[in-house]
Length: 183
Ligand SMILES: Cc1cc2nc3c(=O)[nH]c(=O)nc-3n(C[C@H](O)[C@H](O)[C@H](O)COP(=O)(O)O)c2cc1C
Image 1: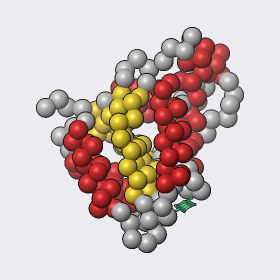
Image 2: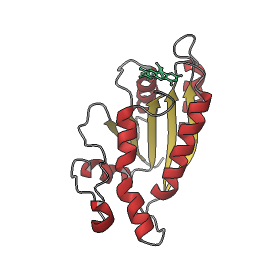
Image 3: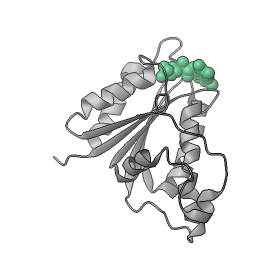
Image 4: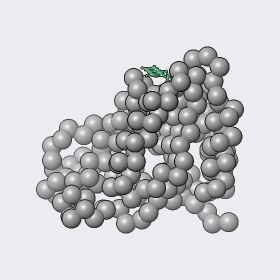
């Protein structure tokens, strides 16, 4: 079996929360692959402030995500994992998505050519206290829009719903494992 580079981007601060439990299961399930984890609550990075430096210079003025971007560009499979907070991504995850602006400006400045040449795959994991369906669809559509510029194919999305009451954790984990197996 080919050893894949898997990048897990964590968007929850709760160590034993549903999102992180699903991320940990992903790590265990994919142990034979090369795994990198980027925890948006632990890593220190600045939010995009729309300075437009990237538009003129083709790179971000901030250097704090250079290491991350390298892993992001070279991964085979990327896991985006976020709780639903106020109908969308947790704040640090949203902040990371904004930092992809460097890729968006390059795309439009270069006749809609993707800056990242390697086509990667992604799986989206979300956890919601309630049904979360509308938020989940909205988050998926946000990701799909970004992924078209980031050269990523969203191969599957799983939602762990009703975490405030009787969560769908077991079913979500099964679905996640099935989709990891397919990749
Ligand atoms: C600030 C905040 C906002 C939230 N907003 C929503 C929401 O809009 N919809 C929802 O279904 N659950 C909402 N929740 C509940 C979380 O989605 C739920 O607790 C989820 O399990 C958190 O993910 P985690 O277990 O991985 O930490 C919110 C929780 C917090 C702390």
